[in-house]
Amino acid sequence: MAAQKQEKSVVWDWLTTVDHKKLGIMYLIAGTLFFVKAGVMALFMRIQLMYPEMNFLSGQTFNEFITMHGTIMLFLAATPLLFAFMNYVIPLQIGARDVAFPFVNALGFWIFLSGGILLSMSWFFGGGPDAGWTAYVPLSSRDYAGVGLDFYVLGLQVSGIGTLISAINFLVTIINMRAPGMTMMRLPLFVWSSFISSTLILFAFTPLAAGLALLMLDRIFGAQFFIPNMGGNVVLWQHIFWIFGHPEVYILVLPAFGIISEVIPAFSRKRLFGYTAMVFATILIAFLGFMVWAHHMFTVGMGPVANSIFAVATMTIAVPTGIKIFNWLFTMWGGKITFNTSMLFASSFVPTFVLGGVTGVMLAMAPVDYLYHDTYFVVAHFHYIIVGGIVLALFAGLFYWYPKMFGHMLNETLGKLFFWIFYIGFHLTFFVQHLLGLMGMPRRVYTYLGDQGLDTFNFISTIGTFFMSAGVILLVINVIYSAVKGERVTVADPWDARTLEWSTPTPVPEYNFAQTPQVRSLDPLFYEKIHGDGTMKPAEPVQAIHMPNGSILPLIISVGLFFAGFGFIMMNMENPIMNPWIVAIGGLAITFGAMFVRSVKEDHGYYVPVEQVKADLKKGGN
Image (cartoon, rainbow, N blue to C red; front, top):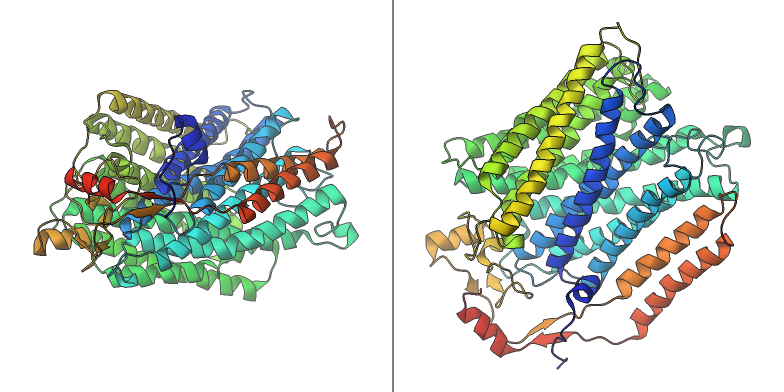
């Protein structure tokens, strides 16, 4: 039998943890910091556009901000914030004690973080990337973009590796680690949507990695994949990017759908309407999501046949999305609804996302897209999907799972005030941008002339951004206030919810379940409340529980990748402080050395003694 767990200092424990719950909290903190950083950039850009011909930001700084804002929000804020909930909640919802590969889970987090830090370091080496978050060639070629673009390429390359291996881990976990009786058609919708999203990551991040590798070869080693006068093709980058870029929207939106599908039934006191239809709609959205990438390229000149095919496919994707919308509405219909903060965000998500979807269908028509494509109409549409969809769902999930994650409630009064300030600010900011687009205001411009009818709506849009910023500040105040004065949660299920995570004690023990639960129905906890005694039936006797040891190797591997990426970036610097090859090869040596140690070192984990498990059960554990 393996040894018992060794005591560690708090800092060392968090640096070496492989516990999915702690990693979920670390994803939440890291994603929030990146979210705030990108939000400040958005606020500064809106201040620059508040009045005609403002000089708050220079054109170059605006370009850097607009590139970093989009890149950080999608890759380093939305993705890790969703991964935070996926990490924390999925093993609990399927009745597992951990993810399939705890070491790989920690590795995914640290590699993501090292890639994000590498990207952010561009500010200290001559400025951030400035070619837009899509990094279109030739704007992103060596002739037009400085070393900041190398930080973009290598930072996303490193961060993407972490995202990819985390997704593989989720797939294996959901397939192999489910509790007895937890069939695929009894999985909570959040688990289903995370499973489909992880599949999308598997197939979408690989072309992105290939495209970034080709762009790196062009920029650093003098290749010519995207250089027209050397036989390359700039449109090739657009195809590669959007084959990743459009599924990326669904990588983010599908888990958001899953959160909404957990919150609405819980606070409507009803089973989710049309569970089977919701599952197949999710699968269909994912499949069609790979069929529509070129609707981002209607203005490239692919021809009427190609444009028509992608237009029809894009309109088709609205059908399974519509199924979800109606099922959420039917779930609320006749329900005993509790409008707490989480439910306010979830219910407001539905009409807001519909508005974003409707403008998406408008943009799906190729002739219309020729008019809208490079205007603020597209900016408005995109933010109604990302903020009106993903961010509202993230806030709903935060208020819903917060007591399970942190052991206390967020303040409801502050929460509702936050909701109204943020929600009103969101519509003020982005609704008028539809009108600005229809009036002809181009996107990606850092200033505009006065007396063109654009002044008032730009002013309103900026005021809305101040509202949103105030809302986020209020959320931070809520988190701090609740940590000090908040209502402590000691019961397992403060919401009278329906799914398995609410059957675990609060705080959740390191092993999640003292005894693996026996699942007898969809919404297993609610089923036991109606047909049993309200507790999950065990599928095994009380026994010692095997758990994995923590490891510092994931952090070391990610540090090695950080230095390897930085070494490659140094090759494009005019006066590098040392030989770039030494840094790059040294970083790779650290990474592969740590991987070798992991391969040869035997680590059998440890056991939680049966006496401790029984003691925890007596205290009210599962």
